[in-house]
Length: 155
Image (tube, rainbow, N blue to C red; front, side):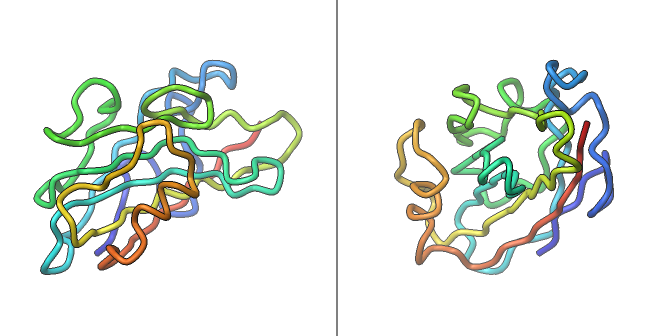
């Protein structure tokens, strides 16, 4: 299983339109697509996290219950055109859905790691207000495969 974006290459710079208004962007969710998950996949989950030491694993996007036959999320899907059944969780900004990059000025380029999880269950039981640790705990023992892509942004 592989995950890609038409907006940036793995290891490349995330374009301005996908970052928060406070960093000069429009906070449009990044387009993502992925190859076929392994046999036995019953749903998919997605996390976008900034592991930079200044950010302390800041959560930018958590999605659960993506249908196993979904193969992509179009640009701007968050809050508008998510696949049927998909549930967006609260990010570290305190809002449900996508929250683009907004690193502190002068802290260098931050990595934004998108991880797609192929899961052995059709639904993940977790509160919409859960944090990253709760999200990861809810996926424990259910992950069949993962794929990642990392984009960078700094100001």
